[in-house]
Image 1 (tube, rainbow, N blue to C red):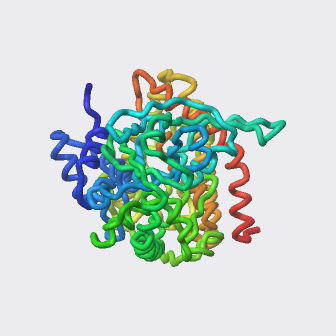
Image 2 (image 1 turned 180 degrees about the vertical axis):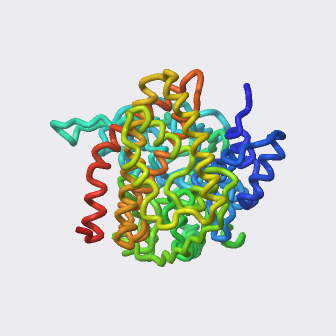
Image 3 (image 1 turned 135 degrees about the vertical axis):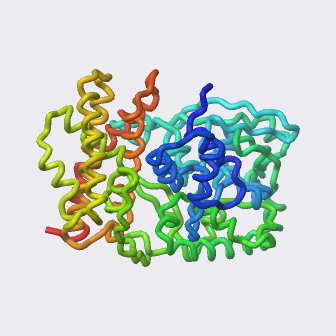
Length: 479
């Protein structure tokens, strides 16, 4: 199978065991690829680093591989308290209790659990009432939350959820599990999501509570220290915990087990918050209704970079990159829309737009080249489903740009938004970037799963987007 740049990038991230900078990453991927890589492609790869499941942003501007943290604290097993529901049904539903060792790239049904003798524990799909299993996924990110929920509109209490369960009849008997006991879940293979189970009787857990409390105190203090950085506070709970564990001294990690449930119960100065669009995460208690942390943004200064269209748009501080700009133009050509309102929306309000004449000349030269290619492509038939999804996604992106323009006119920025609205904007923008990059690539054959995922996402996004601009105006008191 032919290797792609994205797969090579994933391999490099998977192999990394120490923090690295974006420049380090570029050097490594160029050396591994062995051929010339376009500047725009390198810019895209660098832009994707902060969102990569296997990386955590650091205050130094470097990226911390999750596997580097696992090598430091991966010997610590997870203590999973067994519920009366699981003991009665003789099953295991791991859910969010595997945080922070749950592999970011694997869905729950791809995990493997081994019993005390190393035998694979059988799994199956089973449907339960939503209220019976929801707590198992209370802190799960969207990636690890099972779907779909079957909503009973007539009797909401009868809504159901199909989840993956592991048959624990033999394991519970061998472990002699009783109410109040835990399971110790030891990570065996992070890439393949393999864990080994051992018993953890209630009496043994009680004897270890003093050591566990010491870890909780230091871990909460570290999370509070890191929470004053926006990129950390907007990250998911898994990455927050891994980043905090990495900062702790090795002596602090000499503990018998870590339990997310007990840590959350212990918290005094932190709250677990989330939003409909974001991931559950830790934030200082009382800070989650409005973004009150210090977010002083340094004024952006033009440098005149112009080696690529991506560089120019980034230098100008535009809320879109070259691929998104291209998709916006293509969608406009396909509908024969008037260009003047579009250009005004994208580029107005910037005063003297370019840093110098060279940057301006280069921009229009690259724009002419892009538009010539686009005119030719518009004449070439493409699947209607692709063009329709592009149109819908472009409309989402333009709606976000309109919100940014409203903020700009009122001398406000994204950091003035309440956290729940900020989450919506960030997640919608991430969806646009991922979808438009996918739709602009001429894939043969088409990735039908990705097409279906984008279609489903638009069904959810449509109603939410309709009220987002109104919510922004209301929350910020803009008439």
